[in-house]
Image (cartoon, rainbow, N blue to C red; front, side, top):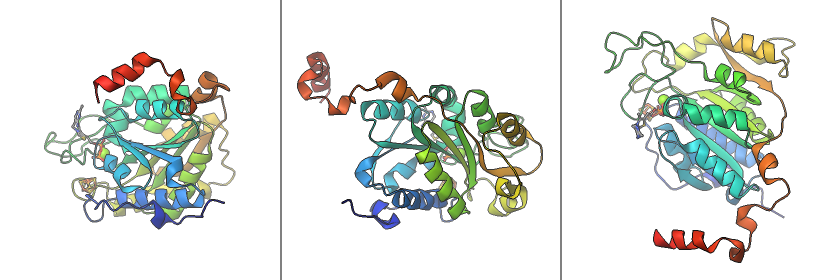
Amino acid sequence: MATVLSPKDFATATPSWWCAGCGDFGVLAALKQACADLGLQPKDVAFISGIGCSGKISGYLHSYAFHGVHGRALPTATAVKLANKDLTVIVAGGDGDGYAIGAGHFLHAVRRNPNMAYIVMDNQTYGLTKGQSSPTSMLGYKDGTHPQGNPDAPINGLAIALAAGGTFLARGFSSEPKQMTEMIKEAVRHPGFAVVEVMSPCVTFNKINTYKWFKENVYHLDDAPGYDQHDKQKAFATLTAAGKIPLGIFYREVRPTLDALTLGDHPAISSLPIETIDPRLVALQDAYA
Ligand SMILES: Cc1ncc(C[n+]2csc(CCOP(=O)(O)OP(=O)(O)O)c2C)c(N)n1
Ligand code: SF4
Ligand SMILES: [Mg+2]
């Protein structure tokens, strides 16, 4: 029988690089708790991340991990899932990684619906490169590249994902660990591509969207009586309404996953005997060893 693990079993010895108070600590804590609650073992999890302060998270979770190229976490994760569909694949990255350089991959992952959870750690800035405007920065956000204020309207990643065929869309706040843990667990359990956007304040560069600002500017869908997570029109209206930022699970539906459609009952590549792998691939691999 597999041992039941605690969040501490998902910690690594890697010292954290994040600034004290960074929202990303809350995301990591929720993730470890979710993995423990789900009864996962580190060997069951492949954690793929992008580049950014957020992307460093894969080094802090004891699991298989791949810290990829900026904006390319999703195609990498899709390949991992197709190679070994038994792995629980979790992807994480920043608002820049997912909604700027990786925007094309984001849309196509949403429509393909591979079975994995994607956490967008949204601090409304490019933290790693010292606070430039990101696709989710507010109009007027001031930084080194926009000293007069950001002239670009922010994009709404979850509404875009809903329009592209998203099957699970949620938003959490990094200083609400219990709600975030439950959301991540639901996302991992969802049979398809589950997007969890987490408002994760950058205490060093984003002096507008602070913890205090969020506490004053969010509300919880759980407080809205009768909200139906299967009502697409309602989800779209909720996500795009002006005013306070909604938190919760907006929408879910079940439709065939990329893995089911492409692999069917075929065994995953990882389970094939080595002799059945095309020798040209082995030679190619050896050439780069
Ligand atoms: C191809 C490429 N372009 C640009 C960069 C520089 N770069 C590194 S991280 C980053 C943005 C990070 O912002 P975000 O994804 O929001 O992550 P955060 O640091 O805010 O968590 C950029 C532009 C890069 N590493 N690679
Ligand atoms: S720069 Fe911002 S996002 Fe990066 S570790 Fe520091 S607080 Fe977090
Ligand atoms: Mg960011």
